Length: 142
Image 1: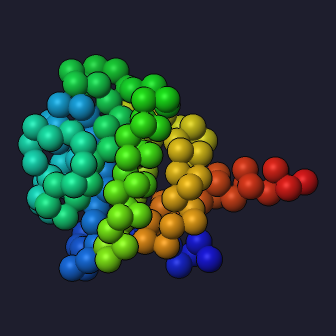
Image 2 (image 1 turned 90 degrees about the horizontal axis):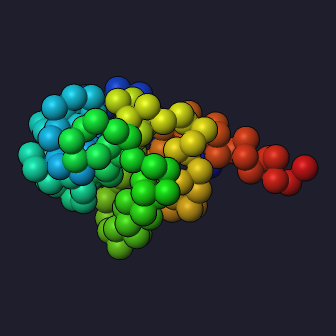
């Protein structure tokens, strides 16, 4: 059930097999929000996407940090993340509310990008993403 796979609201420590998944910018300037937090677990300044120490970056903002990426572009990065997580079942991926902070997207827009992740046992999602995914699912079956 999804309640067993919910990302904590405030992640202050990681277990040895946990990976902190954060929203990034394409240029990898991790100066604010979850990206800044990720620096303490190995996020590499200058790397915007992918595994970095005990973190995984998903770009949601352009290189100059002046504009959010489109949902379609973010989906490409989310899909790559999901494939990576599938290939690494030994890790637990704690997805933060990517795209919903500094990037300015809504939970309603971002959560559907993680529809496939809902069935992957080593991917944990934020409560607000689960709520949107489950609401969308129940509407489809009415």
